[in-house]
Length: 255
Image: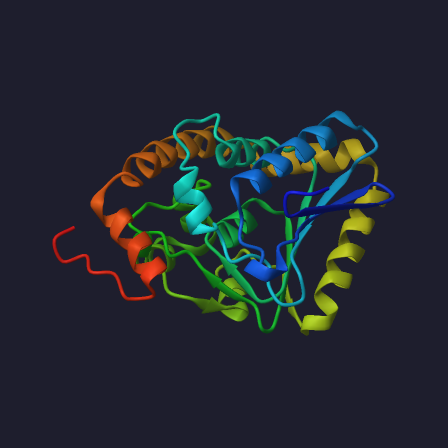
């Protein structure tokens, strides 16, 4: 598959790889659209039992490609990024992730929706939404307090500062921290193990684990999205983008 996404299949496991190495796998509207379509195909294929997300050895993803994101700023729930968020939220298959290097923005919030996450010792996580003049996305403002507790989630989301793999594990959304060259193999092994189990009990167990929070997650996705789209047009987000392009620190004094 093109558009910066590489899809591979081993048996009943479908792997979706972020594949823009020249941009540290930064995500574009085209990539979101391609991933949403692939997840739709997975849902329609009863022989596809598990989805595995991965980047490269150097980077999981640098988050949104800011230039592309502002040129194609999402204006509604039918935008590619929101179609991808909806597809992940509604996915009935187990989701496994292999994380090497930076996992920024959605690269971190995606993991809150995954069932098993394997991270390299050199993985670095960040949710710099306030620093970019916007709010968290992907229902992370609901899911992160749920797994990490309010105070820890508040620190990570309000300050938006980077943190390492051990802190991500202690926050509750990383399954295991491994040497970098073992991460992808471990994720594949776990995905294949899930795929060998009877599919209905696996899907029902996953649904039961998530059922108590499904409605709240859907509400938070919509609410976050409304705030996110509005704030993209505000001075703080414009200043953050200008500062990024001009390679300087943003000035939010009057914003």
